[in-house]
Image (cartoon, rainbow, N blue to C red; front, top):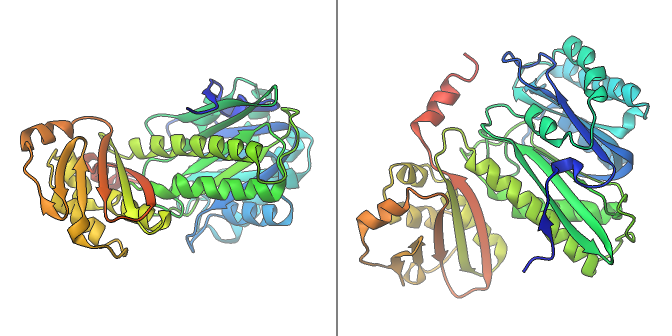
Length: 404
């Protein structure tokens, strides 16, 4: 049983945070497209970023900022233009965003982190952003998380949000998060933005360790289409406003916070995979029996990302051969004589041997959401889980028409 409970409020559930989202005119649709998250006080900050060699200016800016000093007080995010592959103009625009936001909030420019999402190669419409900044600051509210969650979306169909509460001593500690992502999703990281707030006091080094670990278990274990984005970013703030004792070393309090943080990130990651462009269901792949957890996670990710397997799920075809083939090419050695595959409650293979199963009933199971695939590849203690979605006709339609 977990030691926390889910509560409403997203990134504004923890003490000392406000958020807002407004329509700045950056999206042609006129939808909300500029989000701001602010802590009442300077917060410890940590981040995980895309591994792509083609990166948005905001990614390089935030990585460098956090390397210099692990704190921040505000996160500004625009949707509509990615500001990736925009040359020197993009770098200048990020600095301008930080400076303008800082002036509006009366804080130092170095206290502002910046994120963007949208079409690669398009610079931000800075005149519209500058005009809208005072409005987003005016709208800041301790109930503003949902507006912010809406303002960071692109092709997403739904917002992604969660908050958890636990107790350290007799005081509540909360972690909240919002995220966006629907296409161009693949590990290390995916096309996603995720912003996490926490009201515990944590040392900078430990907070970064926690964020990196949570990302490994969550955002690096989802895949929609095999493409890694230029703008991926997970930013997390911890402002100490819960007034609980500072967490500076591994112990019961740190383990509780780590578990909560990982759960928040897994929830957001699964929501992203479920909202994959054109998807009709979430796929969860559970792998065990490897020598270590890393190997199990790799096999699970490979299966979740197999285009043939994803297509079979969309067609409601219980084709276990595609699962076995994907596991076999993951780069993890195992004996196929020990391979066990289960789809829901249907055992498809045991000890490397195909099993008789009710194909019609298994096909019917594939109409459920989520679809659970379970593999055992040996006798090791390693285990890992990955999440993905089916591949539908609509995925091609959405991406064929994305900029046209």
